[in-house]
Image (cartoon, rainbow, N blue to C red; front, side, top):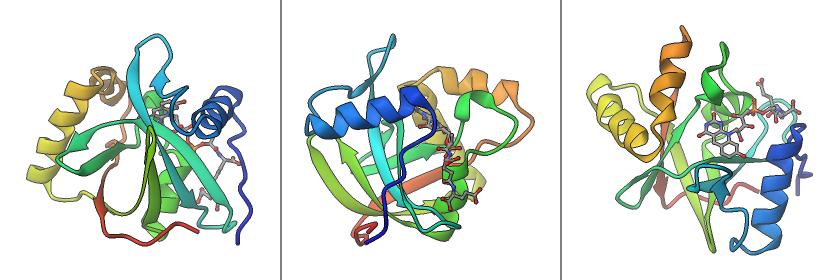
Length: 149
Ligand code: F42
């Protein structure tokens, strides 16, 4: 089984640790906002390492919408590259952990619909898109995948 390599960012690593060590009962929101977060466990496309990335929880029925905003930074986050190559992930939503399969949303109409859901769930996403020239990647995670590890 591959090794888990924690995020080099302290606040991200600490949120993952609290979320997981509490079984999904603590550290489940983005500080200050109180809005819910999920933990996406996935596989590094170059290292093969297990990565754990907290993202805002955006739901579309039983699916999750994953937004590669990284605060409106000029480049896509590393996890986006991982998901493009290794689409089998595990999503922890508080106490529930499910294997899921992600796909990047390329269709404009589908992306527009999902982007609206994302901004409704977490309004700063709209500012993040304004702040960057890149088109922020959108993924949808659907059930019936296989485990990330
Ligand atoms: N980020 C978002 O983009 N969207 C969100 O909705 C979001 C919400 C959120 C909520 C709570 C929270 O604590 C953090 C939140 N973040 C959100 C931040 C998010 O968790 C990530 O930290 C951020 O998006 C940056 O992702 P990243 O994958 O670029 O992280 C970097 C800092 C990182 O961890 N890099 C590692 C490293 O060692 O440098 C891993 C790099 C990696 O995955 N390498 C791949 C490999 O093979 O292992 C290769 C990747 C490649 O470039 O091909």
